[in-house]
Every structure is written in C-alpha cells, then in structure tokens.
Image: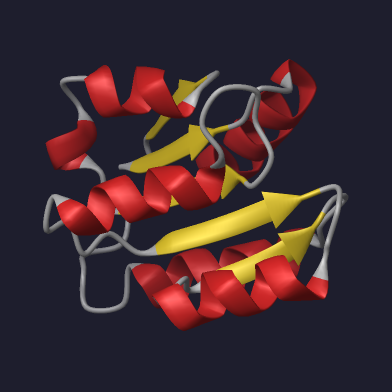
Length: 122
C-alpha cells in the first residue's frame, strides 16, 4: 500500500494513476491530518507527501510519524524545491525529494527502493 498526501487534487490523481499503473494499491489523502487519522496508516508501506500543505507540512507529518516510532519510507514532492528544505528532509531520513513536475521513472525508482524486500504486485 502506497499512501499519497497532497492538497492539490490534480497531483494526487496523477500520482495515484502512476503508482496504480505499476500494480500497487494506493490510498490518497488531501491533508497530513487526514492521513494520520486514517485506519489504513498501519497498512502503508511507503508514503509520498507534498512538502507544503496548508495546516501541517509534509515535514511536520514526517516528524509526527517518527515520534510515533513509524519507520515508513517517505518520498517528498514539492513545487518549491528549496535546498534548506531538501537538506532537512534528507537529514531526517527521507528516501527521496522530488520537484514537481517529477519524472515518473525517478519516482518509481524511489518507490521500488522503498519496497525492496517486499513482494511486488502481480
């Protein structure tokens, strides 16, 4: 299960489409809070999250997950690729940091890396 958290509906739909085209199950959320409140969080094997969202940023979501002991691989996507934010995400242990629009092959290489050792779909 791959969770996608982004406040931009068109990005959520496009990312979900890409991930599903490789046979993976997805759950999409319009906010970090919706993801944290979901009952599917425990089934999630990889999280793709926007960095900048209205009430809780992707980095804040990452911090909450780590504080709860979740070792979920996280791939960040952003329309504003600031170097200081990239460094912070990488220092915290993020798997990837991609600028929107991102390259599908690059995204999928991060997803496959996140799921390494897990059964692939099909």
